[in-house]
Length: 399
Image (tube, rainbow, N blue to C red; front, top):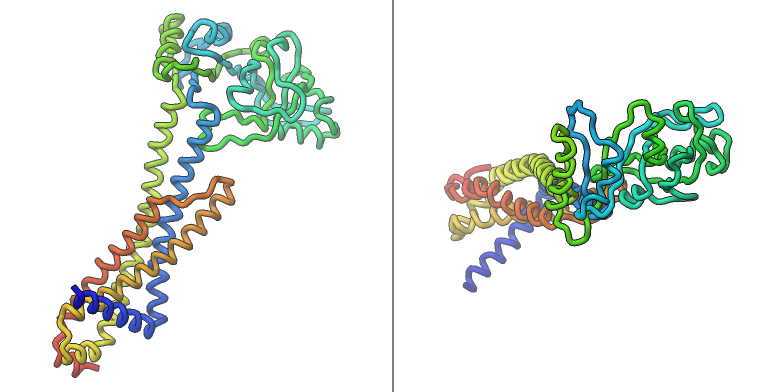
């Protein structure tokens, strides 16, 4: 055991010296491995962070959220507003429901266009369900049914200021020939990829749902966001909503989903994306491994006389094989550590740009360093085997 330990220590020492003597070649091989490892770590970590951020968006609204919308391609009458408003009162499985009635687009103030978004008819509970925050004023109320009050998004408010009205709360907006007084201004909010309810709040104007239903030529409920009652399993809430609408119109085709169902679907999709990103990064890692093998093969050719001297002095084929294999492993492990640093820095840069929470995926680190070690062994075996098979006499005669 002691002899084996001493032999390994000697191999490490000799391998380090050999790599140092061929510094340029060592650095080139290290760069190839480092780039491959950095690619794997950055891409896998970015995929894991995207998954975490998407989950955070869902959980910010609550895992008890249920969404209802007419199935794509359905040409029937759709959901009536009175049905949507009665959903929470009629079903004990649902505590709150907020329908959305899409209205006209194009907002005009003081003769200037101040927005290209859409008007949305909503209820007072909508802001709480989708987490809209007010910068000033109030949100639309169920008491606004007979009045023309609206709440504007942050970009619409900024456009009103550019149009000459410094205080958006004093403004009037013309939408489809009707004038709405501004009752509130929303804080800026951008929908992320993982948001279960895409609102586009910054470019939208919100009015009372009953008002939108009254002034829109062909009114319809495009979307309902609801919250399951406390203690109700999400599958029970979804089943209750589907059964309630089916009872009223058996022909109506709906897509009813819970936040937990959407989370599972989203994580499955992002998991595939993470695997794809890792596979793409692994291509450069394999290329780096081939570069290491080429470097080691060149090293064997250049050191034929050294190998011959060592064999003549009593070194066995196993000693020669071990020395070159150790060199390959040291090179790839060093490249793996450098790649870990570069990949972590790249991940930090991505998170800083996207304003995501930074972390490095443990899986990517383990896989990256493990694969780099495996590459050192795999791509170092052939050069090490070739070195150990050299005939001492032929090696001593070679230049």
